[in-house]
Length: 123
Image (cartoon, rainbow, N blue to C red; front, side, top):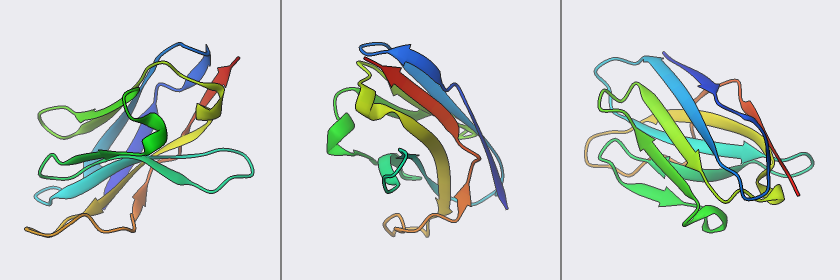
C-alpha cells in the first residue's frame, strides 16, 4: 500500500512559480510510475507529467518547457516545479502512483492517489 501526501499548492499571479511536493510511503521493494494530474472545475482530470521507475519522463503539451517533474534520490518524494504559470493552470493537483513491472511501460491507470493540493493562478 502506497500513501501519498501532496503539499506546496497556493495562489500566485500569472508568470509566477510554485513547487509541489508529494511525500510517498509504503510500497517498499517495488517499482512505481509516478505522475502529477490536475483537474479544473468542470473539466476532466488530465495527466500533467509522469516519471517511470526507470526515469523516463513525459509531459502534457500544455506544460512542456514550463513544468519539471523530478524525484529525490530515495524516490520518497516527487516534485513538480511549475514556472511561467498561467490562469489555465488553475486546478487541484494530484500525485499518483502505480506499480511498474520490470521491462514494461507504465500502466495507464493509477491506483494510488494523494488528497490533492489547490493551485490558483490569477491574471
